[in-house]
Length: 457
Ligand code: ARG
Image 1 (cartoon, rainbow, N blue to C red):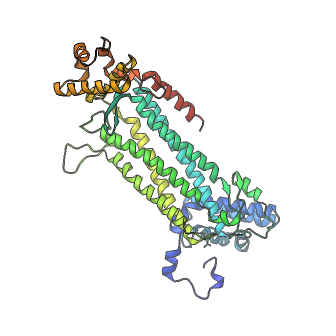
Image 2 (cartoon, helix red, strand yellow; image 1 turned 120 degrees about the horizontal axis):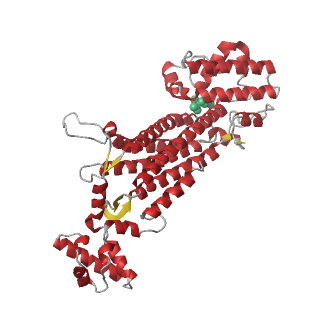
């Protein structure tokens, strides 16, 4: 029997019912739904809309349902949605009084409230996962602060960088993600309950009671907006999408850097996979899967944004389509962050290979140009002279570090003995001591700054 059957002569057709139902996925909201209903019934009792005995009976009934779902003794099934399920079960348990729970409430403000409670927990969880991955990245940065590795632009060797500086780059991204989720949490923590179907209610309710019981920061100020606002769902999906983008970049680096061609890092066997035909293969399936799953989170964001754009004020059933994208994005995000945090903690480094590679490809050419510019040669000219030196090296097939002072001086008389030191990989990385730079000191400063900012969450 439907909550809304009264107005109808015939029961809903089986296929219409199957198409309309949301219980198969919104059962995830059971905790939020019962918690919000307990708050609502408590408020109805306090306001004298229900007698205290009625409110107590409803709350006790709801709590017994909560306990039974939690313990696994009550299966969620047989109704259109989670709201109908909880109410039906309540009436089955406590009788007629249970039918009073829905006084001064609609499923419209109910589902909007449930989704916010659920999304608030999901946001807290995302923040915990982000804190965990940044902590591991900072750990790895601390361990590798003396290692030099190649830095790339256009995926061509650019300049030697500090390994800690590399990890700090991703910590910066994830810290921005953390801040975005924190801001989202503040914005989403507004309570729609009390908006009823779309226009408010004639009952003398006290929304402040439910607000405080459910730990919302404020109550919504416009009923039609409150029942149909799913901005927080779209925002969560955007925050999740951007986090996945950052994670996917890190995966791409991992896949490249652990290949034979690069050989900078190794993924331990426990986080690698093999091939069914090629016995020699050690494949990076985990980073590949995380990279691959990024697309589905983006897809969920697009689905919800598109769903929202055609919603005439106020509630429309389209809004039921907010749930599956949210739930799947949440699972995907949390699983990806968690597996990658574990993998990062186990990553190993081929220190010498990274160092040697960092010096290949004339990666210290900028230091040669800077050397000249610091001695008065205009940078543009210094750039041109250095370009010629690189061409000379290519012709002679030798690295910059193999050039003699005479060879340097043939290009410009400004070169002195100390240029031979300037072109080494370590000196190049150490020379960039600016804030955010590649020197050991700057990278350590980066770690300290990240730690300070992380501690605020
Ligand atoms: N399952 C619905 C949803 O998720 C609950 C709200 C139903 N409200 C209604 N007016 N039919 O949006």
